[in-house]
Image (cartoon, rainbow, N blue to C red; front, side, top):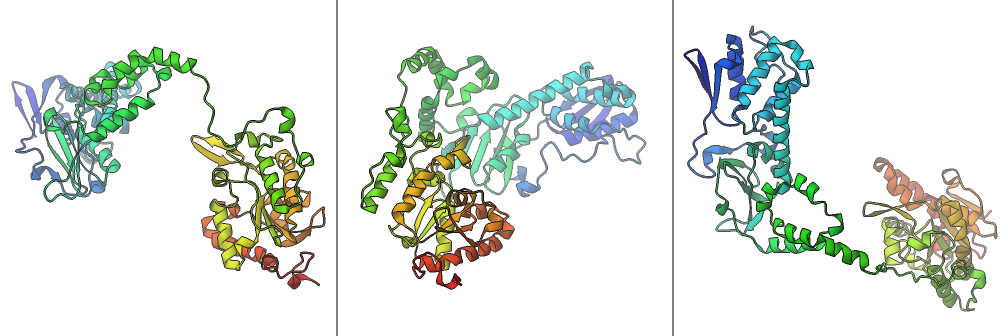
Length: 528
């Protein structure tokens, strides 16, 4: 950088279009000399480079340690050190504004920034005038730069060149035409986003390459230097064509967010015009098409009376296995509460008939609902682990839930578990009672408050009553403890202790699980 005076006019030539450090130093010196804005002519010169990605333009430090090409923000004192007489303190946001505006293509940007610096020094009230023409112009230029940077991150499309020579991984190359000098400033975004890839972005004035370790900057390129369309692009166009929804088309808004100047470099742009042209007719066909039936396993019921069916209407077989199969089929059609209408299927209990021990949870989870079996999700896997640690034969225990359908709420595409209400659990109680009557367990384990309330017929404070045997309303013995999902949701640092305490609770039913208890379901080791 250099500056010299000729006929009272100071000409400043900066090293490059984004030479913020040079502008900062020159502005400090000119301000110290008292040179007014209209006496300065600002120019830039391009750095010479011999090839596209010359070794001398490599940035050898890791990406995480490299400063932004616009320079790290060092202080809010643009003009110098505190001890310097030329120091002029400016607002911190002015530094941010300068770092952004220098990336603009307008050749008058440096003159505008120096004029603002001069005026901030000599007109303190300027910082409180948001409608000043110079401030408004600078803000608009900064906004245009930020928008162009956003468009680069959104509209870059890579095409793949297979490994060549000694290279072990393919190179992904993209062509982009920015409106402003944003390439180096936007490069760190792509380093963070595609750290494990080898990629290059070619633009008319500046190009960048990342080899997985080093980011290199080089001179501009031509569009024909970028690779042609490949098979992956054809697949993307097929996908884009199928997800295009004509009913949601807002062409003016689309062109605002994706201006036409970017279309020529976007593979999907060739589809926009024909798809938009036939949007009206496609929307009409969508409206006229008959409603689709969801792919659900629960058969719609014919009438309201069938929806209100209960076990009292069933003629159960005398064979417990066949009776349990009848109950399972009946729960598929149950609509005594709203849960069944939205579930994939009912999830009935499983295990051997006449099992000495029945374990009852709250309700099926997402995995249980999809697979149709109880205790197969994360909580079920934790229960399996507990059985293994306790030496319980898992195939000799009947496992079930107090509620037979999965209650959930949608969050995006995820189905999040939602605790059944008391009314919903009460509506499902007769299914559980009929299940118990067919299995005839000697005792039951209630996992969680919903199961404990269903089995004991009263509200249960699980943390207070856990690890104890209780007597149910029909005389059955019930051991209360936590549901395994409560352990999964707990503090990770306390999970080992929580699991050990849970195992201690379950161990009280070990004699039953092993079939070494008396007929009344009270473990011999616990009898008085």
